Image (tube, rainbow, N blue to C red):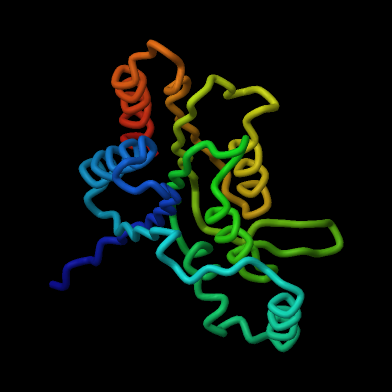
Length: 204
C-alpha cells in the first residue's frame, strides 16, 4: 500500500537585516526560525537574504519592459520568478529593522518587484483583490525608540496594507522597542519579544 504524501508548507523568509549577525532584528529572526522549524517539522523554509540578491528599483525603462511582458501574457518570464515564489508561499516571515520611520530600502525594492498584477494581486471592475496563497505574515523588527502604534512607525501599516492587497488575511507583528534608550535592559527587551514570537510561531 502506497504511503500518502505529506504536504510540506512553504515558508518564505525575507531577511532585510543589513547588519547581518550584528543586527538585533536578526537575533529575533533566528529565534523565530528555530521555533517554527521545531513546531512545524513539515515546513520547507526558504531564506532570502535581500541585500545579497540582484534587486533593482523600478525605472522608466524597466517598467516599460515589465508592462510589455504583462501585455503579452508572458507571466513565466524570469523577471517574475520572485513574484511567483511569493504568491505560492503558505506563510511569510519578514525581518526588517526600523529605519527612517519605516523599513530598509532593500525590502521596499523587493516588495516593488513582487507586486505584479496577475501574479500577487488582480484588478477588476470592483477594484483590487489578492492572489497570494499565504495565510499569514509575521513581521519582526527592533527599534531604538518607542514609537509602535504611533504615526512615527510606518513599517507595520505599510505591510498591513500590502497584506490586504495581496490577500494575506493575517499580519502578526513583534518588535523589541526602546533598545537605544539610556539604561535600558536590551537583553530583557529582546527576551520579551522572543516570548511573543514563541507563542505566535507555535500557533500559526
